[in-house]
Length: 402
Ligand code: NAD
Image (cartoon, rainbow, N blue to C red; front, side):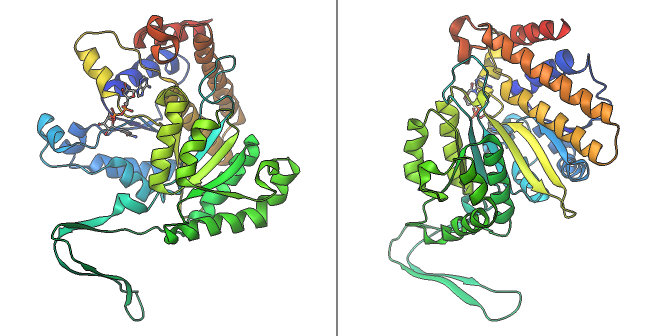
């Protein structure tokens, strides 16, 4: 698999985890490793990012630690020669990103925010993230589309009568929404949860296409399968659309879980943060980027949903105790190892390698969960008496040895 390292607290914790939980049991010599710290990206003139993206396309199974997209202040702080773009954006583009799947992590016997799984799809491309914009004054604003062939099309024309405006242009690519919808419905069916498609299409009329594609994929391929499992009883036998502002309220109310949501890029960004909060900690949410290679092979990149946990890193540097919940990070490592093993098996690799990865990753998950279950979890779950980052790693390592 490809292993992408980042920085700060999650890099520190990942190093501890790989050293104590993985290396004693696995030969990681064939992992292709890329250091996407700001300093290394700057030093290599960002070649390392291009190399990581190519290796990810070739291998198809990627683990990524959280990384930093430096702010102006961080460019100065790290002594970088120039600003650096978002590595996540480059990966979404490079791997033809379809969706970022974010799911709640559950530990048997431990009550978190949602009792049962919540699955999420965040469209990986388009929307506000790729917007072009300018600050403008009074005048006329025209947005014109020039097709590769044919006549130009006026998309919008408006008179601006304020002295101070921000004009913004963005688009939503819809080509890969069919793949997104299949991925979403297959996952919901497998986990037996009720699917909802979330948009603000009542007001943002251009979002109708996202819903329509989901609806036609659902009606043609999935409706009967969901109905036969009794999963459409709450939604009148049909796929249900949910307005995004209503979704923000339901996420707080539906703490029983057992639902899935598929949303546009920005809505998905916001709503999955809300899911993370209801579910106790960003440490209890997965985040997997699903892309597609030109030959149809699915590229899967696995990461935690949170960032580099800067506040704990600064506390660590000050010599204070920290308590990082590594579940999201390790679920991502497990996901990448399992997907790598599956791809190797499909390419004719030995079955025993696949079996070994599956058995061992299941054991690792159990060792972590048991540690939480016995009240030896990190402080986001177990309160102020919970384990420090290092003690949690040691405790799980001890369980793995037995
Ligand atoms: P963050 O997710 O790192 O932290 C937000 C808050 O949640 C902090 O108080 C942190 O202590 C807590 N937290 C998060 N994960 C935790 C865990 N596993 N255990 C215990 N507590 C946890 O977000 P931030 O502080 O806004 O961002 C820090 C850096 O991470 C920024 O430089 C940002 O650009 C970067 N970032 C990277 C990614 C990515 O690479 N995918 C995603 C988000 C943010």
